[in-house]
Structures are given as structure tokens and as C-alpha cells.
Image 1 (cartoon, rainbow, N blue to C red):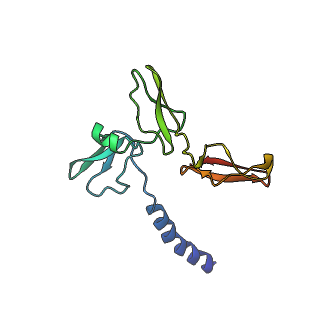
Image 2 (image 1 turned 180 degrees about the horizontal axis):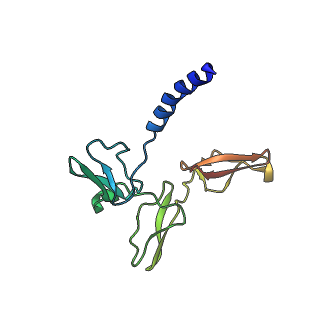
Image 3 (image 1 turned 60 degrees about the vertical axis):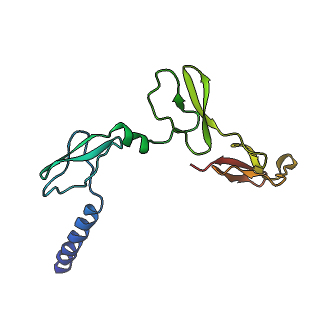
Length: 158
């Protein structure tokens, strides 16, 4: 019985340490820091930042437009990146380029491969169809994924 009690006492500080290692972040417009603040100094929403009001209070508030542009998240391939009335992020993910489809819509599309590269989703290995790469490799944003002995394919790294 004494062994169980001793183990319980030893486990409690370990649990407290592991909980302290992952402090919760604050919701939009709520307190995120201040004197004796016991939680993490962060906001759950990446478009908000913890702003100090005084020594006792900091709030999660929207980032300024300049901060938003610097922290802009990438738009995935095939996502909208522009057009009339579009107010989202204009930066396409690595390996893609924003292409104007028409005045109302621009789209992140895979950047065409150079002369020594294989296009995304193209075959990059295997014995199927007498495949020969002839010195070509997958684009920098892709990796050659082996599906089986007969077919390997250039796929996005992300």
C-alpha cells in the first residue's frame, strides 16, 4: 500500500511538468497575458496577436495588415489567389504560380517543369511502359514516390 502511495506522489510532479510544457493559447479578443498570467502568451488564431495594454492585461487582437502580409499562409495548388473582389492571401505555395484565368478568378497552378524536370504527377521511375528518365528528375517541390516495381510518380512534398 505504501508503494502505491509513493508512486502516486512521484507521478504528480511529472504530470504537472508535462502540462506546463504545452500551455493553452487564448481565444480571439480574450486575455493572453498580464501580471501572474498562468497560461501561454499566444493566440489560437494566427491572424491575431497578443497586444500589451498595461502590466495587468494583454489581449488577443487582429494583426495589422502589414503583419498579416508578412505572416501570410500559403495558398495550396489549385486554390484561388486573385480576381475581382478577392481579399485573401496572394502567395502561392512553393512549386506553384498564380495564373490569371479571367478578371474574376486567378488560381495557383503548378509551375511548369524546366527542360530537365518531370512534371508533378508524372512518372519518374519503374519498369512500366519501358520508362526512361533520360537524366530528368522531379521538380524541387516534388519527390519521386515508389508505388511498386512498375511505377513511381512525382508527387508534392507537402
